[in-house]
Image 1: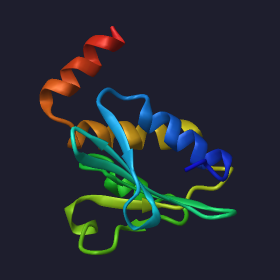
Image 2: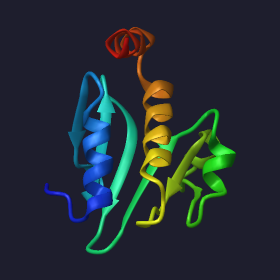
Image 3: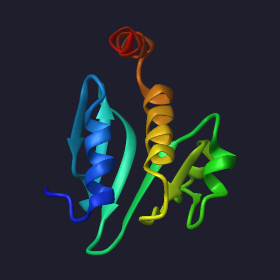
Length: 119
């Protein structure tokens, strides 16, 4: 499934850059998984992208971003936030939220592997 806009392309590229990640397509959206556990759900439409991430540390910060809300289906109560970024949303902020979600969901051995690779 090809990305429909640059924000979606950036989110996909970042999510896929981590070790042991696969992309699946349940419910007509992308689910980026590390070792079978989803750390980013992304929905792409013609002119918009929204994505959900698990944020144990920066949930409140993310909820202050324009267009953000607790993720539906009871996931918001478990630290998941849905973001609706625009071209004005700094890419670095989006990447840091994706990174936090990956680290929150990935097995500890995989996080250690990621940290070793960054040295």
